[in-house]
Image (tube, rainbow, N blue to C red):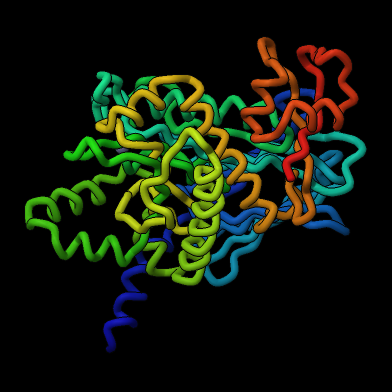
Amino acid sequence: MNKLFIGCLIFSSLLQSNEISFIKVTEPSQNTIEISFILENVAFIKSYSLESPSRIVLDVFDSKLKSDIDEVYNYPVKKIRGSTDKNITRIVIDLYEYVYWKKPIQTKTDNGVLLSLEITKTKKLKANMRDIIVAIDAGHGGKYPGAVGTNNILEKDVTLLIAKQLERTLKDTEGFSPLMIRAGDETVSLNDRYQIARRNAADIFISIHADGFRLSSVKGASVFIWSEEASSTVARNLSDAKRKRIQADIKNLKIYDFDEDTAREMYPEIYQAKIQESKLLGTKVLDQLKKDPATKIHKKNVEYADFRVLKSIDIPSILVESGFLTNPEDAERLKTMEGRRMIARSIFVGIFNYFVEKPIPNTVIRNDSEYLTYEIQNGDTLLEIAIRFGVTIDSIVSANDIKNNSIFKGQKILIKMS
Ligand SMILES: [Zn+2]
């Protein structure tokens, strides 16, 4: 028996046992339908929608149905059906019309993992649309302060404030849904960070940092992606004690968690695609950081590093170092709202440009997208919106026929992004 074959046996026995059953359909509100299933463990799921006839498909990898699903339901759901073929369970929701849907989320419960898919009835859709889910990971937090600035600011505070700036822009931009990995000063483990992104079906993962270095002259922003090569180089150089700690940490995955390491070995082509996409996303964000006059660049290319939060098998993931808090200039820049807002803006515009090049079907951004729609919030000014989107006030005024710079809460405006 060759080594590879033994490897496959081990992997399949590790990931194969996930049993899935249909539970129920509920209507939590007038136009919303929720379809629930129960799994034994958090699964790797690909979800997508198709047209003519309208339907939503969930492919649950390394799972098997407990019993066949064949449920007839009320408008707009025609039928829920499922079957397992070669370790992949395909669940299909047949629909009478087009709907707004959310990617299914997985919630740990005492009885297993609840998988729920939310569908919203809405007239006038030309396709089944969904939001792009952006996981925003503010580095450190809680009992881990991260780097300490020359001006005594803490990395964990800087990263959360940048994360909130990015969240603010995404939250009120049509077609986006931000997912905060931590929303306050909380301690979240490195494993939990990418597990939360997996359970909430993130489309991309952005980790935000502002680290320190022993030399205070070192400054500027950089963008990293995870790589197995960097990881194995690091692993080779690890002391035995550290290696044991990492192995223990990985074994420490909590009940129901998803094993990204085994999945990466099982689906190398999916992982390779993710690395390419991460590199493209990183390049798009770095391009914007380079355009920002306030921010200096530390590394002019996307770097590879062994940052565990980035290691999901399929979610394009980048880590943005917004500067060195040990450098007085960077520390002062990141101490101000203006400086942090520029980092968030570079990430946001980078995300937009990434999806123009790599659009996800049936989401707000297409290959030819130029505009986004933003809903004005209390306290917004045209200048501030222009800065956050990287556009000019004039372009907003002319795209929306705004008179005397007057805008109001709830107003939806077009932003010309390119
Ligand atoms: Zn950090």
